[in-house]
Length: 319
Image (cartoon, rainbow, N blue to C red; front, top):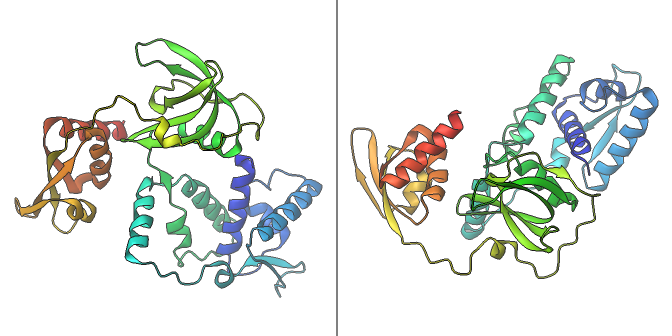
């Protein structure tokens, strides 16, 4: 499925969930990005196809009669759409929390907020009190690598890609054509793993070394992932020595940074309004990626390489 169609379906779901009254097809056409540029016939075909696809995946689009409109209206009743109450055991909740930490500021949030803004501008009264639009849609993978979105889509679509890649041994840049099998994170760095057509062998490429745009190099559905492939193992190094565990001293504001507090091996009072934690770590970059997420509530005192890694992260975010 193309990104444009995915965003259009998302916008349609948001529109029909957010409205408090049934919307006619014409009103939806004006309010949902992706429909407004189509002519009458194209819109009708597109809208019917989108409704059927959403219903096929279990989204209950209801047809209702609005007394103020001549044409039938559409909406999604929140009670029929939402999942029933879910009860998780402690270990299950921990896994969900760990997975949620991978996702920070959402790539879907921009589309969601834009759709709601357009709905309100068109006179549609929206309901944002349920928390669905402000919570579940504000998820984005925490990576600053520009190549990530295109590679994630290529993995999803099973599509070969081509990109300029700066080799580790120097500053030379080579063009690589890759059949991507997965995008994985290791020690705070992101990699795309797949079959390198130029070398005719499996390879892993660090996203931070991709120095230009990622472009399609074939049709969707043409990449086949071999059975038994473990993409996480492919970003390891056979001769890699275990990193030594060290302790970082981190100051945190009182009542904040509960994640750091839970893993700290020691917690003691510091200056007024601050506590001092000792947290074990092996990789300064990975620690920095975690601590920087707490912004002004956490301050690494030492060791120097861990402190410098956090400062570098924050400067990069500022830039």
